Length: 79
Image (cartoon, rainbow, N blue to C red; front, side, top):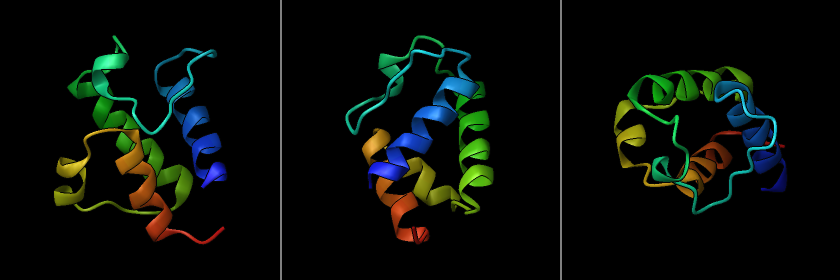
């Protein structure tokens, strides 16, 4: 799971244009000022592209934090 978080940090830094941003399982949209509905769409698309996966809309709606995202990603990939 460490690899998932390393890659997620890269993606978050790119989407939010913040090279020092670090996310953890408890990180939510409330923790990142720039995280709005538009950036959320960009974030989900970038995650799908970088990990080579596809989320269902129901999955995305259930994400409460980065930990939920990471678990979903982990279930879809093999490192």
